Image (cartoon, rainbow, N blue to C red; front, top):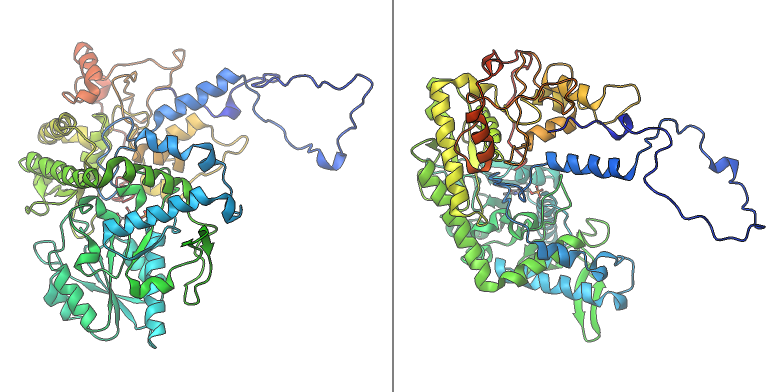
Amino acid sequence: MYDEPLLFEIGSPGRRAVSLPSDDLPPEVELPALEPALVRADLEGLPELSELEVVRHFTRLSQWNFSIASNFYPLGSCTMKYNPIVNEWAARLPGHQAIHPMWPDVLTQGALALMWELEQMLAEVSGMDAVTLTPAAGAQGEFVGIKMVRAYHEQNGNPRKTVLIPASAHGTNPASSVLCGYRCVEVPVGRDGCMHIADVEARLDEDVAAVMVTNPNTLGLFERDIRAIADAVHAKGGLVYIDGANMNALCGVTRPGDVGADVLHINLHKTFSTPHGGGGPGAGPVCVKKSLAPFLPVPRVVQTENGFKLSEDAPLTIGRVRTFHGNFGMLVRAYTYMLGLGGDGITRMTERAVLNANYLRKKLEPLLTLAQTAPCMHECVFTDQGLAETGVKTMDVAKRLLDFGFHAPTIYFPLVVPGAMMIEPTESESRETLDQFVVAIERIVAEAKRDPELLKTAPHATRVRRLDETRAARKPVLRWRPGAVTASEATTAAASTELAPVAVAATATAAVAVTSADPVMVEATPGEDRAPSADPSTETERPVSPETAPEGAAATADATVASSEAPASPEAEAPASTASEPVEPSAGGEP
Ligand SMILES: Cc1ncc(COP(=O)(O)O)c(C=O)c1O
């Protein structure tokens, strides 16, 4: 991997990436000079580069990214499924890409029809009556949903005070409820990982505005009491919010609307394949039963005799929740995905997602400790309990997985499971890939027993070694400044103690994985946790030593072959850098 400098650090005065044609004005025409007030004199030090330098720079940076397009990404609670290319094609059609939200309805009939049809499809799949596509994320969908719950109760004369939330809920659920002015009351989960009707009834009174249930929950389990819980809450005049972000385990098999939901949100960027990218854009449509439809945000897409139109005619609406109509490109992708699969295809998607998760659950059960032994839905949760004697923790397993070319699972989440490793394979993965992942875990568990230090200092084969993530979060360096630390210095420092730029931290958290095509190198000089730069004059390239190279995972097959031929690197056995502070547990990614 190259130690890529910033654009400001390369190039040379006078280099250009563009050549503009000369103007075709007659020679006698003199262009007026630019207004002095419009000319900036303080733009010193802008990069000057050739086109090739720019292309190589960005191509190299793109290779540092780990993505679902490069390898297995079992990040629990995130449903990192394959994003079909046809979705991108559809989103980039000129009529979709160039459309402007301020165009009049008469010019946007196609887009409005797409939105209207997508609303119908989501209503059908969730068993609900009406949908808003506006929210830009799952969490915003929750906020919108709970705001509607409040509006509904206010309309009935009393907004009520509390929302019941199980301990296994996604963390955004209580946050959204509090934002809407509610107090959250936690409902414990039983030993089976589920919420029980008796525990809900014990907390249920006429101050309860809603119960908010992530189903399947964050342990990957279906809340079996949901129907009885919904009936009990309804009997007290409360509403049922189902967090449907995990619909990848339900679509085409069961519908939240049929088990009592009054309101739910769906993450298009999980279940319906629109890509997660750097925190956005996303889409968190909210589906409601008829009783809540009057409160939906505006504008609404409505069908009239003269075609579709955007309507703001909704006296009880909670109002606008976002500029315009949500992230339209995400809607196009989800629409394309659903049409492509069709009803049967969506059911098969769900069945395979659940099958894959249970396959991994059974295969990994002899190696790691399951948080719950019952069959799971779309994801399974393990703990590091069985590794306690070795001193190896969940964080170490997650970091070592990067050396095998896999993204880490979500770790230390859900919070109800100490040392959780939450694995969500999705339906996209082949049995071969799942088997390779199992082999990697098998090796890692063997390494934990044989050489725990190897895991505690992992990753070894990524561009950046283990980082101080706490410092990266607390003291992020978000801006390049002339004369400040350079990219390569920052990388080194981030890996030791000086500072940890957030971009570098993100790179490590997001798993810069080694693929068979990468020149695999390990920098194991004590005190310097950085993979070597590509500059042969300053660094010696060193192959991965057999001690640090993961064996067996097909994803790193070339690296493994190379390493077994290479002489053992004495440095690789050197004590790990002592520079890093203890790292606070943090999720392997954002669940
Ligand atoms: C169950 C659940 N609810 C809510 C959310 C929040 O969604 P978002 O990250 O789009 O805000 C997530 C995110 O993955 C989730 O898994």
